[in-house]
Length: 112
Length: 110
Image 1 (tube, each protein chain N blue to C red):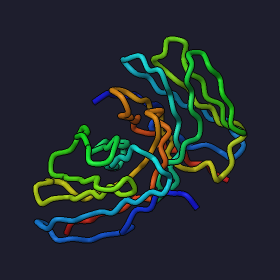
Image 2: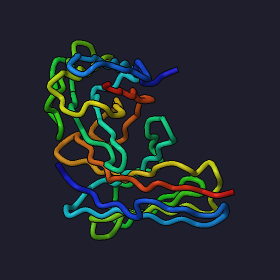
Image 3: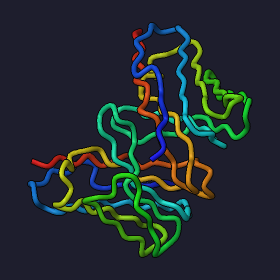
């Protein structure tokens, strides 16, 4: 079945460690996105990529990094520079700039 | 980034009641979208609106693209327990970027 897969679903890390969240899609979408969700704040855009080997910063990119070496994959690294990394992270993919996105099930990161 | 004001922030209703929520923007949007997020899951697209004044239904859900292009409304009729979740409005700006409202948390009491 076509879809978008995030892993891991839950992740615990110590403060100061880098963490990489995986996002894979088999929908053949050109565009992929990473959002962060905190309680009561909706979804905030971290990074997005419209094509392989290209990506742009979103509204809250500081402390995060991404890569887009393959169309199917868009991993997100939460670096030690991110001041408040504990959050629910959502990956999405879409086509044509319509805003019709398909989301993964999310990864909940807790930094101890 | 672009800001969307969504209201109400939360709603507590009885099963069978109708629900209304809305979203406003300071800027004109060419597209309005409504997503629903079940607890612990990613959002799922419910309805997409592409034309000012457009009224679109999806089962018990009806959404409207405001005539000013700065607002949108979502109505749910005859609510059921599985309607529980967070409802987000969203609109694209600056190419393929999508901005989301802060969500309306819906609780349905059986």
